[in-house]
Every structure is written in C-alpha cells, then in structure tokens.
Image (cartoon, rainbow, N blue to C red):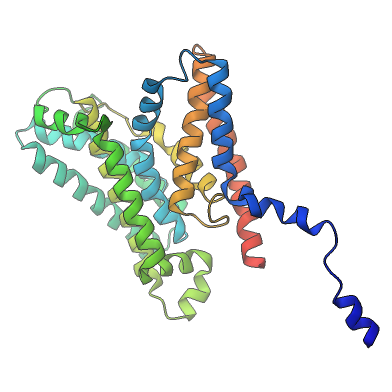
Length: 336
C-alpha cells in the first residue's frame, strides 16, 4: 500500500510540459488566428505592391461584411442543430424584393423594412416545414431554396432591378464612418449582440443544449420546437438583412446575387467551430474564420489573377477540412 502511494505521488512524466505547450500558447483555440497572421506576412512578402497596402486591407475588411452577416445568422440555426440551406436564395429574394418595391414607388425605408420582414416570414415557413411537417432540415430548406428561386424569377422575370432605386438607399449602403463602410459596423453590432445573447442569456444557452443533445434537452423540459423556430427565423431574417445591405452597397438589385455566399458561409461557420471554443459554433471563432478565408482567397487571386477557379477550390477544401475538424473537436468536448 505504501509503495502504491509513493508511485502515485510521483510527478508527471517529462513529456507533460510539452503536452501542455499547445494550450499554453492557445494554439488549440486560436490556430486560425496564428494562421491568419502567417498568411498576411507571406502574401505581403510575395505581393508587397498589391497585398500589403491600406487599400487592400480596407477592401478585405469591407468586402467580408456581407459574408459575415449572413454567416452569423446561419450560425444560430446550426447551434440549435438545424441546417438552413435556403440562406443564399433568401438573400437573393431580399436583394430583388427591396429593389422591386422601390421600382414600384415605395420609399426606400419602407422597402427595407418589408424586405427584412419577408425574410422573417421565410424563416417561419422553414420552421413549419422542419418542426411541424417533420421534414429533415437539409431537405426542407433545400426545397425552400427552389421555391424562393422560382418566386424571385417570377417577380422580376430573371432580370436585375436597375431602375427606381432611391439615391438615399445607395447613400445608406455606401456611407462611411472613420473611413470604414457602414456595413462593417452592421457586422460588428450583430456579432456583439449574438455573442451576448448566446453566452449571457438563458435562451442562448438553451440553443446550445438543443444542438448538443436534442433528446436530453427535451427530457430537461426545454421547449425544443420553439428554440428550433428561433434558430430558423433568426437565420432567415439575418440573411434577408444581408441582401438588403448588399443591394444598398451596389445601388441596384442584381439577379441571383446570393448564390456565391452559400459555400463561404458554411465554410466559415464550420471553420469557426474549431476556434476559440473548439467543438461549438461561436461568434468570435466565426469572425476569425471569415477573415482567414478572405485573406487566403485574396492572396491567391492576387498571385494568379486569371485563375477564376481558385476561390471555389480553396473554399471547398476548407469546408471539408473544417467540418472534419469541427466533428473531431465536438467529440473531444463531449468525451471530456
């Protein structure tokens, strides 16, 4: 017995400090941030005249505001365990609808409100399909994407809305404060609001509980269906808001504008789940992932400007790797 106690009291093996090195420097939680710094340095050395400029950094910051907004909305639905594949079609609908309303005489302020509210309605329809009709969220929201594509085409005949856009609407989308475009502030405000809600409000923690273990959440007395409704409505409403801001930036309403945002949004959301709080979708991890992807794609485009396929390849590979890492981190978290 004495010998056993003596052995158990021995200090950890010499390898223990090395095992603790990664958590000590935060590499397990902030690897994306370290990689972002490495990419910035590398691209600055490779393309100093085009990448390492204040104009380029400002462009990267502002160009990702729309991606950031739509990704944060998607993240809320993913947290509660439902996939919203309709966000791109929803954004396209909002882009066209806000332009269509102005073209037909509506003040731009009213058009903005109605377009965002229409996104909330789409979220309600998604929630009915998923929670009442018991259709898998992937299938249900994918079907909603097709419906929205059809309605958008019927609304404008598959054409962009370029007439009737109010000057005040375009001024709103291109306003700046301290040389930073207004959409960046929208992104920041939504990020802070969601961070507070998810971490300091009971409803936010309940969303995590539903996404982590649906059966356990139901047995614990949580209103699972209501929480899933919340996730889908928030996702759809934020996607519509992203569409409105996008149209305001351009000063017109191009057709099929949201399609290119679907893959980057999912890539950033899943990559973000490997950062800051590994194994869980979280706001600041998502923000890091958004700009990591943006810098990675931007540097490759500057290096090979004629290769249009590079961004799709990069984002596709990142999505696969990010999902694999997110699943692995989630398993480790649950095991712990």
